[in-house]
Length: 317
Image (cartoon, rainbow, N blue to C red; front, top):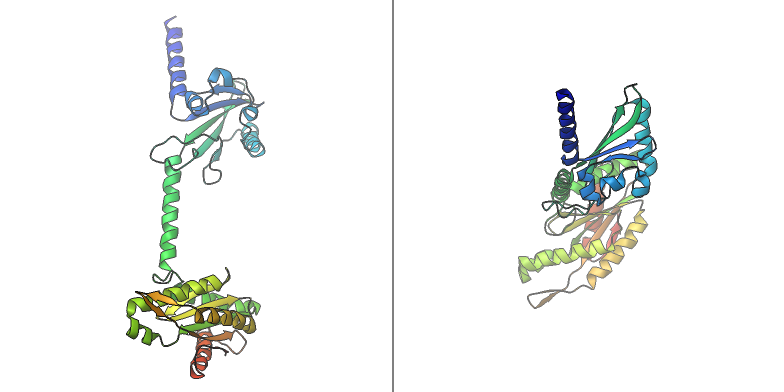
């Protein structure tokens, strides 16, 4: 008699623990009908266990990806092995609101789940147990870290004054484009340009005005460029544009549009109006260009011709 009482006490403790443990706990039979629904599930779903028991899981929660979930559950029944899902693969199974104050920016609870078989005395799997872990804190921390890493990567390749790609990054891109040309012989052009008489701008209006001219020039470049174009600052008042899938004539049309836009600009700094122009040079990759460095030199030579011929013009090298 005392043994039965002790067994009942142990069973009561076990059920109490399962009800109050800080993870979701569900037991399903082979028809996907709920056999156990603990307090965690009650609190987050708003559905009492007595109302959930015997109900079909997918009818109660139509948002659950049924085909995916049934496939995962079926393997547990058939193979008698555990199955898992992590938030990186699927953020959540149950669309529960997130109530954690620390990670309040998350709209929904991020979840990991474990599914394992429950065998009968005959060794058959008649039910499965699903454990739902609230991993919102971990998920949001990882996302914040990922965002910070992306920001650091962006900053590491961005020129601070202009927001354009810095020299180190665009030269890496130039090397890749040169290698791509060697493999595929694709039309690729390099445009280089600089601000005419920029030293006079600094000497006349001051370096802060010069910085503003560089910024405005950079914004105009970005406004003209395509998404696939790689715009960078070479240094000082010089800029480059890597133009994939573009012949020299297409690059010239782009360069002339940019040149005319800049020619019409007026930069106002401390009440003073500043007008400026740019000179541009272009080189399309061809068999005679033996390196990325020579490609840049050819474009620079075309820029030199523009300057020698009176500035505010485009030439192709």
